[in-house]
Length: 278
Ligand code: MLT
Image (cartoon, rainbow, N blue to C red):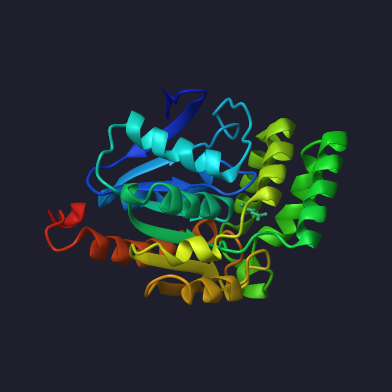
């Protein structure tokens, strides 16, 4: 992991591999470690996995809008001298950021992978819920958000709960949430609540897109991605069984296999063969 200076902040970023650049954007209130199961993808592509401003090891200041996080993502690509269009992959809040990159900086995007996310803005009820949560977090600290979110982040079916490594995943999420500064959590909740509806802007996005969602995601359920399927141009929809809102973390093997196939198509026939077959 190293730090990269941008105009008004510094981002911590983990990079691995070479070839097609693939930017992985984490969800709220997490950091790059939620993508640790995706490291094997670096056999085929150049993975760029930042902590977004204020999260993980990126010092902040905390985010003011989702658009700002999208501009940070592009500034990071610039700082890393990534001139060719990149694949932008984001989970939940990271998905909202990826959508903003596609709309604000279309020439920087080769393809999109939207994971456990949606295009629509918050409902008034969701906004009120975020305001209430921010007030509670400001009063009692990160445990409020860990308590509110962790039960909803992962699959609830018996099969999902019984998955090997489930206690470690819960522990990882709890640790990450506790390490996120309160100021980042409250600022990000405000930014999430204020984000615009992306349905109409996303109709203009023409790059190849893959939509991935856990079948048991209760935060952004499969219907969200099914609606996105009708907005984007011929996207590929992949529903992951026995997974919740954290599909890449819950079942990295299945996620990576599906995304690897999509990335190979995106890279095209001239792309380098996977490391094992060189
Ligand atoms: C996330 O996982 O990034 C958040 O749940 C996003 C949201 O609350 O909309």
